[in-house]
Amino acid sequence: MTDRVLKSGHLMKRVLILLELVCLFGPATAILSVGAIFLPPMLLATSSASRDDWLLGTALVVCGCWGIVSAANLAFHLVADRHWPGKPVQLFGLGLGVAACSISLFLVGASFAGAVFAAPIVATIHFVVLAKRRSA
Image (cartoon, rainbow, N blue to C red):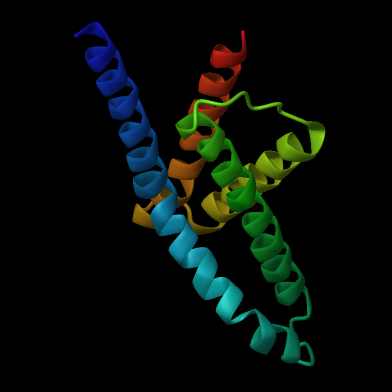
């Protein structure tokens, strides 16, 4: 009886981690996907008057993609109940993702879109705290 209760508790934690991943990273990932789709035309339009815009857009898309891959890796380790090593490359990827969300948050200001970009920052901090708590 106790094994079944313990396993259902682990299942509930896994479901909640996946729900947090989808709800908090989902909207920002959708916006990142749109940015990745329009990245080639943006790079082709470098002959326009404002050449600095494409550099910022490209940096946000690249850093955001690296960040979402690192966050997905961290969430996978949490769901699989495996030890997350937290190597410097993984932490750097999470930092790039937080930086991309922070810059986007600064650009859109205090609005609904600001909440979309603040949510992955909160989720990343929560996932890192959970991973470090499990490893200790």
